[in-house]
Image (cartoon, rainbow, N blue to C red; front, side):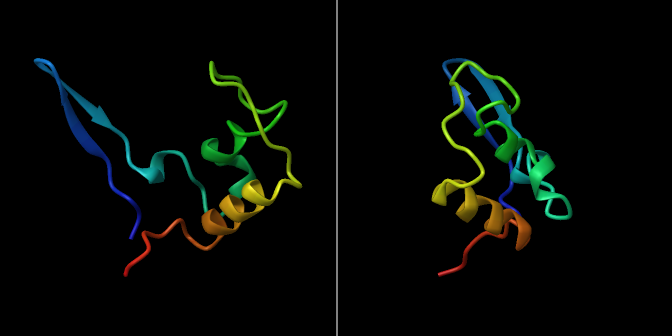
Length: 74
């Protein structure tokens, strides 16, 4: 099961957050927005990129996406 989205109450405004399925593609992990945002030269964002494809954290995240980005059960 994918991690689901959520809603958060901020002051008087409710903000909806998308679930993981909106940013991962287990059939094509390299195209997952979640992974592209982390790479040097990937999709730009204000936080900046901090990994390349050889970084152990990137590899672990890519493996998780490839395996279906499932929610771990205790």
